[in-house]
Length: 244
Image: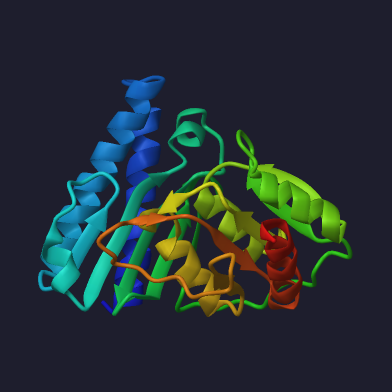
């Protein structure tokens, strides 16, 4: 398999595993989230170490080591992005599999198992026409103050949604125009979504316009903007006003 084929296959299979774990009826509440996370993580990590043994690996659910920092190629995975949504049997959760090369998200796949859908960096679709008034996806539980302020400034419509991957893929799928996040994330939250978004011609950056860089010693990433290219300049300018 190519790297892109491997990423998509692993994301899809991990998604099927998660659906089966949930359907088993053996787990409920937080226990379901833990079981899903751990089971999908075991599959993803074992598969990547078998298929790409020379590459580095960073997963939300595995202990991090410094070994990956010396690798040019590093796989970054999130077995369940949106554990709460997964446990509630919603559709707005995701599985992330990305390959970053020298810090750049070169390959990615985001599975949306609840929608039976995998979006991937090697299969570029055509962006649907944008809505007349931009739709901005925000967290359904803790929408960022900056996102709400920017939406008001540009006449945008707020759309509440679960996981980071689901929100980013809503822009790729043409269900929204802007995903602005300032509440802090980690590399596994955005590596795969950013790879897919960039491959589909979207803008992806930090909220100051600087590039997103992965495989860092500190995996915390404070902010993120994924949007249609025609909105990037305006949104970045509005965020800058808030910080002025």
